Length: 427
Image 1: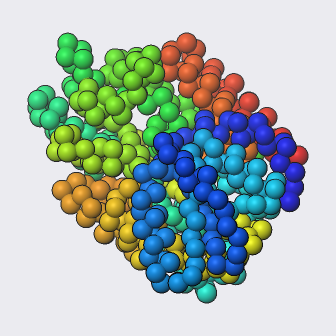
Image 2: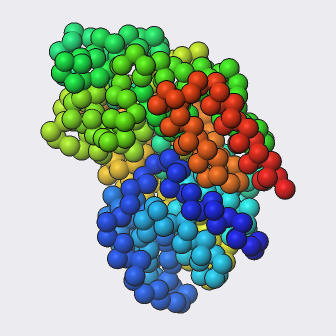
């Protein structure tokens, strides 16, 4: 195992990474549960407090099927999850299985702490074709698969039907273009009532990570050696959001800093919003607002594109109980477990075979919009030290969305900083 010291800064920046399900647990008491040892104990580490109940149901069912096996769930906050894994890796006491996200994956796998799974897939009954290609690619390194996909997420356009009706504006549909989106944002904005047509999304995921590829651009090249921020396509993908902000169709950056746009949307102050699929329980699980909310695929710009992200279950290379851990890992990837996630609707389960079940979790809502976007999904941008340039992105967002500097100037500087970081990764 390589030394981890050079990654200390990266881990301190981990909170800057935007991704699904990064809510902190309010009750991390499970972390304090004493770890037993023995051949029948399997430890699994995860964050996502809203998913713990389902994981406990999975634990119970597996233990019923396998008497004598003890599955220990180690719940950690998103803030601490990867830092704790790093510390455990240094001490060779990692949990047997742990959830992993895209921005941190390459850092861990390149340091030799994750077990490649190719040789186990047949025995586990896992078929790559049962999962979105973009998610398989996200957790593939040097042509080896290192994670069993758990769930995936994309961004769609959520909208408030009541606000559309009040203004006599037609609901979004699958044929909408960006121009249709902007026109509707203008019509829906009512400054006297404190209502905005949309949010100009000062964010990567749920924002320009989608509009840049929709304009034909990229964040990072396929070789993970060059930034795409200094291209005309990247400028186009971001400037479109800035234009919306400058025209007043969105709350300004200060307002969105004080109150995030998802809360404004739920309060009926924003008529439509780009939001990730992990927001579904937040929007549709609230009976007070769900009756007014529906969703549609994102409007088309120059081409269709949707940046896919998702989590995977990884197996520690130093697992002390690898055979039992592999058996539980196979269960986690099974159709049965994916059905459990689908019925709860807290996430979109990774296995394609259960998507119809997931869509029926809110039968009167157009959840199929997310499934339709899979057809043109593009990989979430990552590299070995993603959090380093994620921090540069955060600084750039503050400059661009506060209208302090021309977008092209900010992007030129961002591309240079990101390229410098990527060059260091190669050394």
